[in-house]
Amino acid sequence: MSGWPHLLLEVEGFLGRSPLRAAKSAWKLWRAVSHLKALWRRERPWAVIGTGGYGAAPALLAARALGIPYFLHESNAAPGALVKLVAPKARRVWCGLEAVRPLLPGADCRVVGTPVRGPFLRDFRAVAELAKPYRLLVLGGSGGARALNEALLEAAPALLEAAPDWEILHQTGPAEFERLGARSRHPRHALVPFITRMDEAMESASLVLSRSGASTCAELKAAGRGAVLVPLPTSANGHQRMNALALAAEGRAVVAEQGEGFPARLQGILGPLLADGAARRALSGPAESNRSVDLCLDDLADYFARGSATQATATETA
Image (cartoon, rainbow, N blue to C red; front, side, top):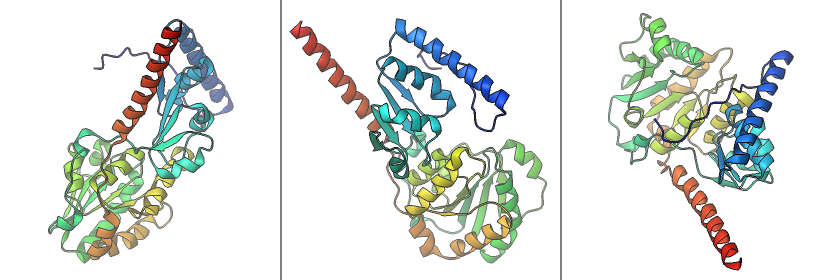
């Protein structure tokens, strides 16, 4: 448990809502912003940090209304409506990917990456150092991953028959594991409900198949692992597709779009990569040390140092 005071505010998103639900969402947002403004007039924070999304809206909108300095972190390559609205007046917008910077004109942006879990803050073996049997790591455990799980189960037998030096470690998620556990599959295709040490699983993989959430993309870069990324078609603002395209532009991923003929398309992408070690090594690229938290803290330290110096000068003048 954190020692910081914890205040829960009832808010919800607007996207995909009926007019009546959208109106209720707007009322909840107005009430939450009003509550924070009243609180912060009495106990004014030095600064506010938001990470985008409707959950951050009350704090960021209240800070902007009261003139409280605020900072933003946008992990995705496609900024949401809230980030676009408040970014121009933010003291700094920390970007998870370079691709988001040109989409926030007028904002003071700095590309810092997206924070990763502690176990990813270390050195990783290069893909070139891995020995047979090579492993395809499949991350199908997130929400909305059923289509990915189904496509891989359909494509896996032919893939593994054509690639005898390969095996598949497939995280399905607990609910999907119950559904898929009894399904027929290739002997070298292992299903698990959940992977606790994802850093170790990723280090042992020569290739990764996954959705393209911001955290997964950051961990792939930290581990230096190439991936076939399947964007979630229903992600807000198409951010998963933008994330996948951003990694593909860096030469770190191949994008596989869902839709009609997806299993065959997935097999057509994975097959050549399993067969071509040079292509896999080129796709993996170097591991990228993740310094996102340190870079954000550096910015905050500079801001507070300037504030302290200004306050001291004002006191001396008085």
